Length: 257
Image 1 (tube, rainbow, N blue to C red):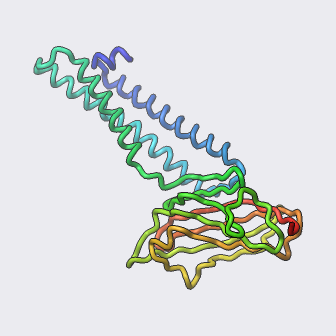
Image 2: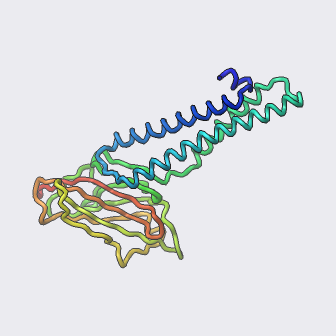
Image 3: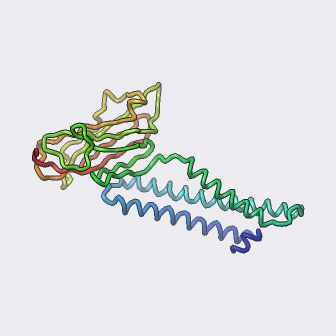
């Protein structure tokens, strides 16, 4: 098939076989990347509904990519056929070479220009994992006593900040953005100790500049116990859109040093 491809003698059956091969390769590559990310972030809890939607989008993009390449190859074969009929070209292989270069250029330009609006960030020092969709954080970190933490040992009774900095993608309406913030703390057995649905309720409007950095204060205390671990989930979401950032991490309450 490769010789037919270079010489421009692909027939309809060969084009169909090439499309199926591209479809298999692109979808398999997408699923491999998807599985690798799950393996890398195995500690992060994924919601089944979001996972199903993500898989559908992944397969859709991969299939469209394969179809686009196949269509370009068909058009290049058609152009080469027309040129041959007119006998205005002595070296038809140049048409195929040009087509391959054009496809590669289109792929590279699209890869450079498509903004990343969904993904996962992880801080391996603290275990802080942030998944985002629509609104994208530039950096996520924990702060206590005006110092960025590289651990999650928190003295019982102390408070700290979860910070999402340099956020992009919030929808602006009438010069303002509207953001919600939920906080949930649970123990290792899954018992919920705190469940705040919206900490920003009543004060959810910000200027676009102020909303580039979103903070959530997390306090420790009763009924928490020393040397116990607790799961913390902080979610920021755009009330003008469906975009959100989910921050998930585990703290250990320690005695005040």
